[in-house]
Image (tube, rainbow, N blue to C red; front, side, top):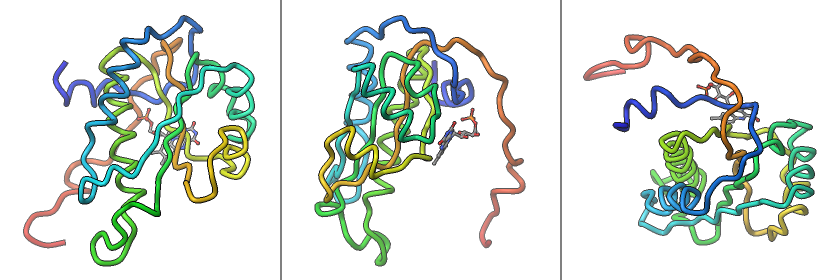
Length: 171
Ligand SMILES: Cc1cc2nc3c(=O)[nH]c(=O)nc-3n(C[C@H](O)[C@H](O)[C@H](O)COP(=O)(O)O)c2cc1C
């Protein structure tokens, strides 16, 4: 598929089969994250792959009982490293949330390209997830996603029209 077609077909998936994800497929998904751009090419990220069923359940609990997080055979947590990220992106902000979000979206799009489902999970208790994953205080957990074969094919969720979100020459 071309990039735009993959983007068009991707959905947030909240029902999964428990069939395993082959290592070579997961490898390509992680490679897409690894190749993402970042401010000053610092790559201030770490991705934690969780297979252990007990840990996946604990992460679902940390995510306010979003059970589908534990339904897929894999969870990936995207972590940011503020201490090494570029501190003045745009002159005013640490680049880590932008860098990690770009890399995570790369991962999600490659998963879609492979026919895998994902769902960006931003609603979770970071302190609880930190304990489950052994993440040090200096590292932030930005998002998590289940990765697995979809057991649903939801319709496209609507988007604003181009005319509403794009202007030319001025705001
Ligand atoms: C920053 C962010 C946080 C999100 N957090 C959650 C979440 O905690 N739980 C969930 O089920 N979906 C979450 N989503 C998924 C969105 O609800 C979803 O992307 C949106 O409704 C559009 O649907 P689509 O992804 O199928 O196009 C999140 C998405 C983003 C980008």
